Length: 152
Image (tube, rainbow, N blue to C red; front, side, top):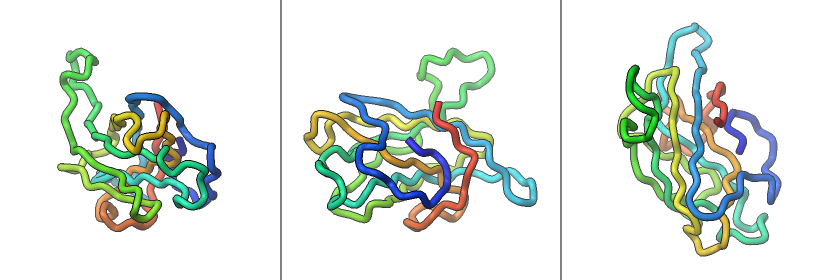
C-alpha cells in the first residue's frame, strides 16, 4: 500500500492483497511548511479505474477508521481505540474517494483502518493507495498534498 503523496500511476496487481478481514495502521507525522502541527480530518483511498483491473470486485468496500494512539498506561489490545467512522468505498464512483472522520486527529497521529473482507464478492481484496487528508481536504476528492505517513 502506498501511504504518501505522489503522482505515480497505479499498476493492476501492485497492491496490498488480503483474504478476509485486514487492518492497515498509519503513523502520520507531517508538519506544515511553517512547522506548525496540523490535523488529519479524513482518509482518501485510490484504486485504479475499474476498466484497468482484471477484476474490479477486488476493490475494498466497507472499512472503519480508529484513533489507534493508546493513552499512557493503557493496554494496546484495541479496547481503548476511538472509533472515527464507518465508510464504504463505492465501486460505481470515481477511483479516488475521500472520507471524513468524525473528528480531526491532531498530529502526530496513529490511525487504524479495518477492512471487511470480500466486500464485492471476490475471494480477496486489493487496496492500492491510502492517504491521510489534512484540514480542509476531506470530501474534496482531490490530491491531499500531505506526506509523512508510514504503514505499520
